[in-house]
Structures are given as structure tokens and as C-alpha cells.
Length: 253
Image 1 (cartoon, rainbow, N blue to C red):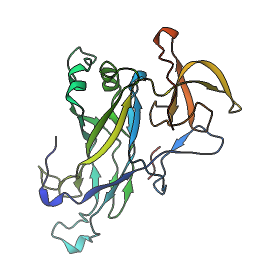
Image 2 (cartoon, helix red, strand yellow; image 1 turned 180 degrees about the vertical axis):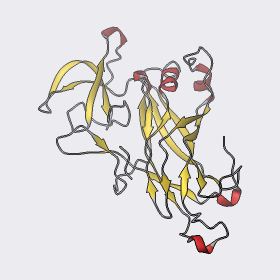
Image 3 (cartoon, one colour; image 1 turned 135 degrees about the vertical axis):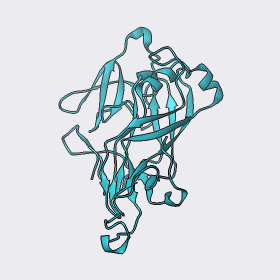
């Protein structure tokens, strides 16, 4: 984990997270920085073993400074995001104890880093990177700890890092954003339905399917009907089914 100076904590802040929007007649999801549809909490079906993605909106909170107004001779108000984000998961102790192992057979750590696409942010600029805050292997491990029909609350702490232009040697100029916490309701089988969407957006009764939003088994609330941006992902075998139906319903820059 990168460390930084305490007096730089407010230079980079997370305002909120935005929900994806879908263009009419298209299944392509977009994350619009000007959107007023925010995501304050999430939902994830661990039965699918899929990852959870989030688009937090970052802002460079530094005031604009000209090169002539400081000793460095450059405008040091621009921030360059680092290529990784620090993640910490907070779960009930019994769920942690019952989690399955990772791909290597070892217990998964609850603190880890994930890669992101970096960008430069000028003073007041906004950026919304799409971050895989719960990787696939964690979803698969959690499926062993959450019984069908149960719900578990997960809190995810997210911390972004950046460097200041012309001042990044050692830890000088390194920016640690304030922790951003995002709650996710974990379930096992709550996004399984029986409606397969046709090309004309009609519902055809089928075998059990996972309902998805933007290609991921997450944040679907609603009855099993066809709507733009919601689709089915994969077919489940009858012996794997619980028969549980859903209960409710490119980054911008």
C-alpha cells in the first residue's frame, strides 16, 4: 500500500458512484459523469461466481495554480492516478470462517489491490474508472459461506492514490484519497429467473438463468421480465437450482 502525507488527504476525493445507463434499443452500458442516477448500495449474487464492478466518481479537489505561482516551475495542481486501488472487505466473522479457498487452495486475504485504468485530472476534473471491487475468486469463495436464500451484508472500503505533477519523488507528492465505503448485499440465488429475452425484447419461459446488468450478475432488482440492459447469462442445471426468482429490482471522462 502506498503511503502519503496527511495534509494531502483532501486533494483527491470520491463524490459518489454512478449507475450505468443504457441507450434505447441497445444493450451497451455507459457510465455518464453527468448522470444524476447514483448507486449508493449494491447487490451481488455469489451463486454465479461473477465479479462486482463499481464506477466511483473521483474529483481533483486542488485549486488551479500557474507555474509562476510556485517554486517548482510547473503547474503542480494536476493529479495522475496510480494504476492500483486498495480494497478491504468487511464481513461477519462466521462468513469469513466459512469462505472457500482461492484458486491456489489458500485462504483469500480480505485486503488486496486491484488494477484500474489511470488518467490525469486537472483542478476540478472528474473521472469515473470502472473498478472490480470484488474479484471473481472472492465471489466464488463466498458462495461456500452463504446458503441459498440467505443474505449477508458486505462493506467494501476503497482507497485511490495519485501523484502530483512534478513532485512525485519518494513519498513527496503522493496523494491518498479518503476511504470510500460501499455496502453490498450478498445473496445466493436471488438473481435466478426463468425469463429469456428474445431479440424483440419479449420474455420466453426457459430453464433457470442468471439475470445480469451490463453483463455482470449484480444490482438486479425486479420481476423476471425483459428490459433494456438486463439479460440472461448462462443456464443452470436442474440439480443446481433453488427455484428462487429475483425479489426486487466505458467510463465517462
